[in-house]
Image (tube, rainbow, N blue to C red; front, side, top):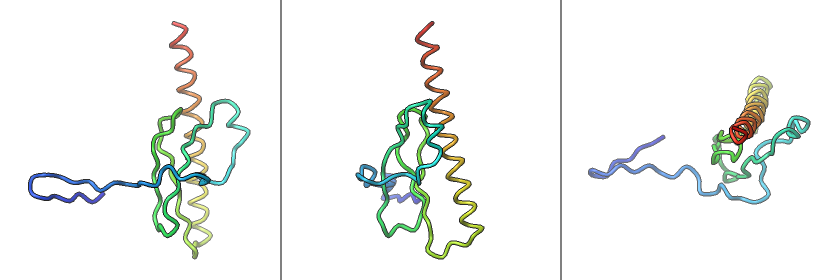
Length: 112
């Protein structure tokens, strides 16, 4: 992240102001069978259409992880595509795992 210093103040530029975009989804819907166990509260946000970078969204309500919207270049090689898909699948698994883990923890904590 770029940090700009004007005099004695430190200025951090905002990451994204378009996190509340309607109709955008984080990634293609995969793993729907795993989503039955915990609520799917993945934040829906979308970067500008001309963005050439991955974008990180606000923390998920249930997993506390920040979802990533992966950039897909036009000339993506098969190896790059495989890596991106593996990253997306790993992110989806982590989101679901931590949502379930946090939900279970909250239930057990309320019982005691």
